[in-house]
Amino acid sequence: MDGTKRGNIKPGSRVKVVQKHHQRSGELTEGTVARLLTNSATHPHGIKVKLEDGTVGRVKEILD
Image (cartoon, rainbow, N blue to C red):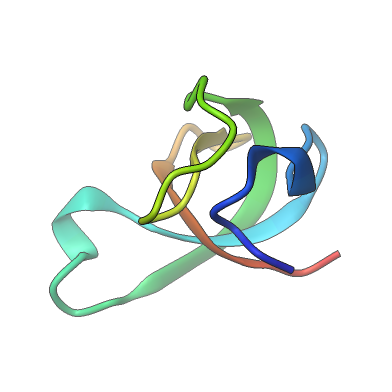
């Protein structure tokens, strides 16, 4: 699914995100969404979320 559309992501979703300091390398972090931080319906670089472990990043892949 597409991580650039807010409607595809909800709290509890398993996702892979890229953190700000990993944008150049593209290193992804897997986790469960705790809350959505982007208010707009879409974002070209991915919806920004906070994972349950406190990690903040933009969604690149939705796993479920």
